[in-house]
Image (cartoon, rainbow, N blue to C red):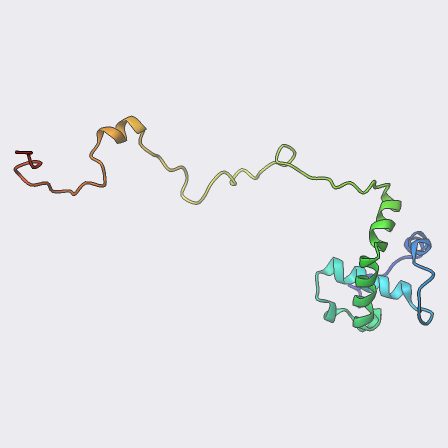
Length: 139
């Protein structure tokens, strides 16, 4: 399977010092294999249950990702690797260019009459035919 994600020796050497060491329960085996499975699921966009068996049991891959996420492992590792201060960053519309066809909906520009012209015309709420005598006069 050529499309599987595997960590190289250099990548593993960078990640390994950040792994939690004092975990309860039996000694874990295959952290590199499980992390490769996690990266495979995240990069391919597949479901956790579709993680290939070569990365280990899918429940182990999911449970380790979920547990490490709750304990802040990923955030701490990325902060240390990228020099990230933990502040959120945002992109606003001043730094993003829209595609040239993103200006409006299909059909082009809708022309609307000026307010002055619309006021001079017959209001839409009146009936289209009025009586020939005109409006009723007050007697």
